[in-house]
Amino acid sequence: CKKYVQCKDGETVGELECSGETIFNQSAKYCDWSSSTSCAATTCPKRMPISSPTASIIVTGPGIPAGGIESPSTETSGYCPYPCPKDYTGFKTRPGTQCKEYILCENGNLVDELECSGSTTFDQNSQFCESSSSTYCVPTTCPEREPISSPVEAIAVTDPSIPVGGTELSSTGSIHDCPWNYSGLQAKPNCKTYVQCENGEVIGEFACNKDTFFIEESRQCETTILRKEWSCPQVSYYPVRPTESLITMPSPTAAQSPTLRTRRPTIPKPTPMPSSTYQYFRSYLEEREDMIKSVVFQSNGSPSTAYTFPDFMSSLDIVVSQLPADKAFFVGEGASGRLPKLSGMEYGLVNIAAFLSNAMEEGIRIDSCDEWNTDSMFDGLREKFPLSNACGQYGRQYEDEECPEMEPFQCPATTMEITAVDGNTEKNAPPFTCRARIVDDGREIFPGYYDSVDYAVIQSAYANTLGRTDIEGCCWWGRGALLTRGRCAIGKLDKYLGQGAVERGIYVYPDINFCTNPEVICTHEKTNELRWVLGMLEWSDRVESYADLNTGWNYIDELKKFV
Image (tube, rainbow, N blue to C red; front, side, top):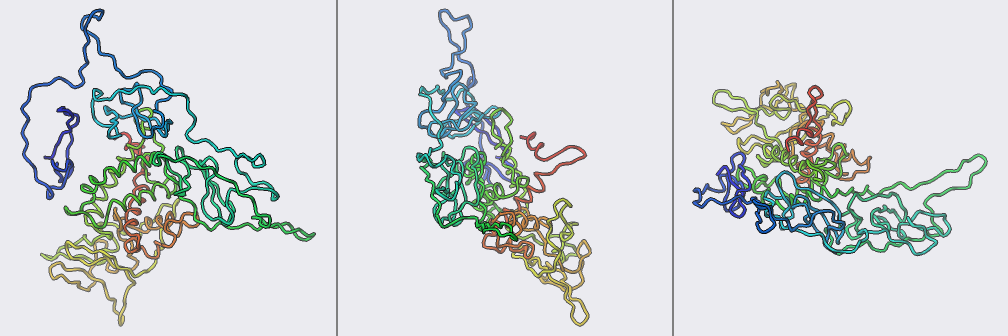
């Protein structure tokens, strides 16, 4: 049961193998933990030899050369100017491509062109490229229809005194993009652009990404394929109130120059909406939620409680759209596929699989937000766990791990008193703690070690493998999906998404200072999201950007080669 095959109409179309300690579960149709299923014995089926499913069909008859010719395809070949059926929304095989290419239609209009990779072809039923022969391709013909207009056209302003585009005019008879006294986001006429309003004034103008439009109902850019009957509504412009002006300009005197008083924006910067690549990427994962939960989100054979699929998806939204461009989690955005017109999404899927496999070995495996004390020493039969392991384990000194000079974002080395939420439940070792040195009557009170035989903490000057006997400044143990450690990683989390990001107009966690209390990652009301976000940030920052200047090896290029 370590290996399994994919069959279609009695033919093998794929051979696969379960990873790690999983085996194939015939009932569930996916690889499962051996503790959750049993291997059912199978025998080789007895059957007559059959012809290849891809054999050419030979046609004979008068006027046909000896040996016959391949039956012509019923699928239309050549140029098809309007491949989308009228009013159709969804994916569809492109006519004349033997199901190797497919298109995305919206209300009968062509939105995107894509191509299946390798030997896969587009399956109209599953709406994905599947491992199957072209024999199973359902022929399509070029729809017969009249030329059509763009799915979304700019709506013209009928009042001749109002210019198209909505630019502000002079104070007399001028117009605005914002309703009176309104604060929030407001669409412009073609729904491709929108403005941010504060008290009826424009304080920012934005454009939606390709293939998305600003939806008034949700106040964000979306692909309209998800909204079957949506159309860009008529947007009105709003006259300026005669007594109000955004800019106050007092009359200058001989000794006074004109001064300007402008209003400082106070509304958080709008969340940039992901492109269609990410939306397809997200849908692909959501459609496989049950399989991912049963294989990935498992701790010791049971569903993880510390790491869940909904929190994983909401965190992915954040690290794709809210981080700086060079730190955003890679989902294939901006990458061309292996073949012309092929989406780069497949690179993103392999990248997320690599990330999750690492998370399974770190936080998910122990079902914990905090790193455990595991770097033990043996004294005879006694296994001892130094409490100073909070400072670092297996040769690492977390407090000393600073950021590169070009990104000096590490948290300051300060003294805090923090206790972790989770401890080593397998050995019953207590959670990590950090605090200042304690001196009583001139004698230091050491944290000591945990004795797994007596199940007790023994206070003594017991050093860890780094020689540390204290826990002062040792608050930077691992946390989150990858058990991310060190002052640099936590400092970057604060700089990119915490209080340190507010100055850049990013309001993801504006109330959290991760440097003054890194354990908030495991105690905040959004902890289930934060533990994913921290791991994904470390992955994008440390793994995706990795490059060896001596050999020229870099992660993204090698990822693409692997795919």
